[in-house]
Each structure stands twice: as structure tokens, then as C-alpha cells.
Length: 148
Image (cartoon, rainbow, N blue to C red):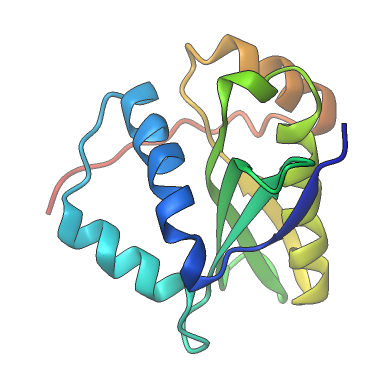
């Protein structure tokens, strides 16, 4: 099966929304529509360091999404790329779509001169962690956060 990965265009929003909703259900969160609208706009604003890529199957159906954010780091002289969201339709699980999306973000990071690509997942996400453990190094860091 052929999968094509490309940046999402404004016209892809209707196809992106069900995957974005599936991602939120998986993590048991509800992101307000206003935030989703703002985020979608940022993906398409050249002044923003945010990107959205999509995986399209042979029928040009959007079957996976990934979002990436570039930022500076006090540890590296080059840009750092944070892969924030990765979600693949159930029909595509185990077919290499997730790995292809990660590789596409890695290519994007190299194109932008980044020195590191990183991402996080929930500790209970054992299926995805099998892939992540195979293609990347676990940092050992634990995330802490607080609402402001």
C-alpha cells in the first residue's frame, strides 16, 4: 500500500478534524474549539514555527497526522524540533504509517537545521512505545507541569 506524506493544506481541515478528535479521545482530553482554530491557523502561518503533516493512502484519504514545533534550546546551538502530536487511523496501525510520519518530521527537522528531534508519549501507550523504543533513545526525563 502506498502512503504519501505531505504538509497539510488549509483545504485539508475537514479530513484532519476526525483524526485530531481521535487523538484527543485517545489521550482523554477535550481541546476547546477556539484553541483548535488557533492551532490550525498557526500551522498555515509562515511566521509560526509550527507544522502539520499528513499521511495519505492510495485513495488520497488522510490516515495519519503529525504536528511539529521548532524552538531554541539552552543545550544546543541549533534548533530543536518537538514532535507534539502523532495519530494514525486504526486501519493503518502496524503498517508503518507512524514510523513514516516520524521520519517525515525528521526530514523536516533536518531541512530546518535542527540538531534534535524529540517527542513524548504516555507511559501506558505500550503499542506506540514499541515503535519508539525501536527507532529512538528514551531520554529518561520525567515531565512535570502545572497549569498557569
